Length: 431
Ligand SMILES: *Cc1c(COP(=O)(O)O)cnc(C)c1O
Image (cartoon, rainbow, N blue to C red):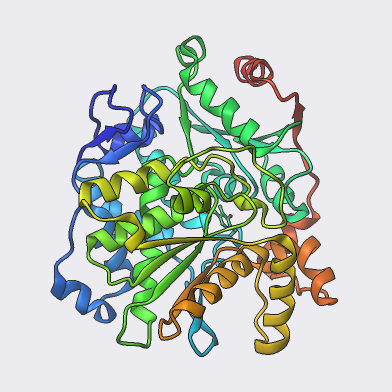
């Protein structure tokens, strides 16, 4: 498999080069030249395959011959070595729980896969690799956990000061060793902009080998297809489901659409957004107008210019299919999010996190117009990650999962920097 840059100015690259580069040299996102198809028989018999077999089959064409089969099988096994259950919330709404990994958010799968691929590629390379990543909350923790103590790789995480939850902050500032946290006096878009600028700074990149672990990296983006296959594997109905995906940078939902192009039966994708509604507006008006991100209680989705949306447009261009026949978008307020967390908890005894609640709202609204459709909300984080929001809403304490109790006791270690590219560059050059 080869990848081209969506900006069309860079040479094509294999999976290894695309993973190491993160973003193409021309600033564009890498996109696969071919969208692989699974056979209809294989998809029909999904329930007979093991999760490892599914994941391997799905990712193999994208990796090509850059990683040997047995190594890739091992990487896949480690990537998904925790449950991803489909739980019933009520009659026609199920939750795919993506929060059983080490940092309790769905980004663990992409981060674990990418860190292991990059670790493999770094072994063949003499220079150290620095992973530079901006986070609106969950990416940082997942990337820190995935890369902690990976030989030959340093990780620098930029996060917006005061705009991530207390649990998230602990998860990205307490690893130490090869993991470094930068607390930026700005918002997520500022962090993302600084990271993007670093990649195009040739003076910097001549001295330090930089790569990205944001969902623009193909090795983080593509394994997210697994979720959708695992959901279908557990789906108790004949009809194809509707997927409601809490969306920020649109990597997860874009991976879902890739799963659909590979042959997975899906009735509809719903992009569930908070007040950051650029894509929702695009679906209404046909005009894509990036905005400043506004802070919300579903902060991992506070993105004003979602990077992966261009990939979605590219899929539909390649498939010559109308976007609107498969994708719907909704936007949900913080107030509505809080109301739904309480209502679903009281009525169905299911505790949603704020992102899952946005997904639930979108699915419910879609079902008002399509009452026969059954759907799956991707529950992208454990509610404990947003206890500052969820506990006051339900008036109860959320039990702390044993897997993060240790992290919460550790001391935060972060470097505070100004919201300016020069501050980041300085930090990186001082090493
Ligand atoms: C990152 C994140 C999202 C948004 O995912 P994208 O792939 O960026 O659209 C949604 N929910 C949670 C909890 C997240 O961490």
